[in-house]
Each structure stands twice: as structure tokens, then as C-alpha cells.
View (cartoon, rainbow, N blue to C red):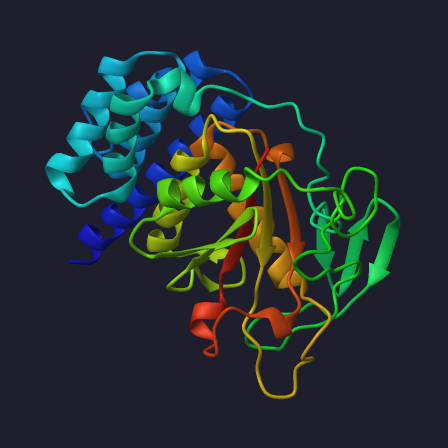
Length: 309
């Protein structure tokens, strides 16, 4: 029994490593290299794994190979009939084709998080582009500290370093609300709470996406993949707000390092699924007072504010 458990653990690790390496190649534009790495798993126990087939389908779609992409997603559905990412991928192939859905990249210059550019969090020291700052290194268990530069929703950093809505004071496009409503209809899916707020759409997830820290649950990863698929090929302004559960005695406001990391992890997953670069997403830490739910488990999550451009 122990040998069998060890073999299963090794296989799971092989899947994670192979998919991670292939995804990194795809993000760097090395689609052929990513596909070659994934194809090498064919004929082994890894070849039919859901994550391997799903990424193969996305790479094929980005290359314009609709038949191959559809075949991979159909293989996923043969084992997992309700898989949301596979169902969404096949639906999108049928509606718009892979190039429009997954293959277009924007060159927006939105700054990726005021402080989510954090590169090291060690012993309470956060390294940022402005140099090291001391914060409380927090987790959901230990409580949340104030993250340097953390901002609440609606006060995200922009490429120019300012805060707030850059369009404030300008006359709004009268058709913006209609575009937001149409976008909301396209994004709605089980497990997501989609709300139209003026000319933007707010997306919250009905269950927590993270087990602890910045570790996605399998269900959370699938939810982000599904949403990312639906964001691909659109001209959108997307802000990802990270949230963190609070515990008694922890600060009740000011943001959280954990929340910042969750926003960045979510942006990475959304970018991989949509085909958009990481710079297409603005990320920040939401204030604890803006938590979407009253219970801690569901607040291990992110929310998004999406505006058609």
C-alpha cells in the first residue's frame, strides 16, 4: 500500500512539474516547445491527466489548431463530464474560434499591483521596487498585517502611480452600462456571483479559492480557468482584489500581504487561461472591511472588477 501511495504521489508531482514547465513556455511564446513537452506524456499515465489535456487544448487553440484543441477537451469530458474549463473551451471554439478567444494579446501598460511586484517576503521584510519595508508577515492563521501600499477596491494603482478612477469627472459613455450588462451575461457561470455596477461588472466566487496562504484549491484553479477562458480576446480593464480571512486580534483594516499574493496568483491563472499577459491585470489587496462574505473560509478568495474598454 505504501508503494502504491508513493507511486501516486510521484505521478501527481510529475503532472504538476510538466504542466508548470509547459505553461511557462507558452507564456513566453514558445508554443511549439510547450506542445512538445505535453505530447511527451502521451502513452504514459500522465497523457490522459485532466491538467495535461487542458493545457494541450489551450496551446492548440492559440496555434489555431481547432480540431486538436477540441479533441483534447473532449478527452477531458469523457472522464469528467461536468468539467467547466473543458465545456467552456469547446463552447468558445464553436462561437468565436480559438484565435479570437485565446490567441490575442494586449499591450496595455497597467502596473501589476502596487505592491504585488513584491519579490521576497522573508522574516517580515517585503522587498519592493522602492527598497525593503518591514511589515507583519501574515497568514490566515496568524492574522493579517498592514501591507505597504495596500489599497482598497476602487483605489488600485495605475501605470502613472495615481489612485482612484482615472475617468472621474468625465462624461460617461451612455452605452457603457449596456456593454457591462452584456459582459455580465457572458461571464455568468456556476460558482460565480456576477453583478453589474454601473459601467463595470463585479465577479465574486461563491466558495473560497485558496486553502491557506496563496495555495489554490483544485476547485479554485478550475474556477479561475473558466473565468479566464471567458475573458480571452476581449478589450477589458480588469482589476483583481485579493482578500484574506481575519482572526480575532488581527487588524481589521489596512490590507494584507496574503491578500496581495492571492491577487497576483489569480491574475497569473487568469492570464494563462485567457492568453492575456500579466500586465493586462491590475492587482491589489482589498481592505478587510470590504470582504465579500461574513465567514473566513469564503474570504480566502479574490474579487474582480471588469470594465469593457
